[in-house]
Image (cartoon, rainbow, N blue to C red; front, side, top):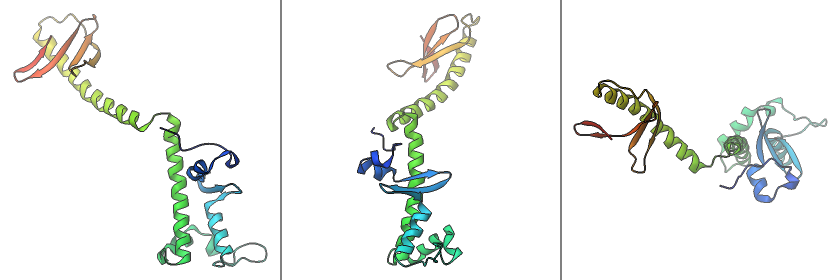
Length: 188
């Protein structure tokens, strides 16, 4: 699988890389970047609101209302829906911080170097391993009790052969195949 998250300067990213990495998390804050800006998603949206005349800026560059500095204010604007310009900008804000969180989660997965197919395989192995561990203990108990004097020691390794039959190797190096049948357990 081709990696989607990259750790490059925007000047070194192509358009697709920038699209996948334009939002990220820094110091627990959603950030937005493109070729000429790198700022918090909150400040980016506030700049848009000021540029388009929805929010007024004081002469010193601060917003006219401190209420506009709160995240809740932008989220509350979503009540207007995408038919309203402020609602549309609020929707953009929500998508920016959601994309930042998703990108950082994907980056953590990609940093492991394990692709989704391998994760599915590892998950299947873990499930089978748990189930097989229980069976190994049970099969060992049954086998050793039915043999009278058990001289092979405890299980040290187990695997499934090409036919998916469970095999158990013991301390002395001997190993057996085990299969459940109608009358109980057989080994060979």
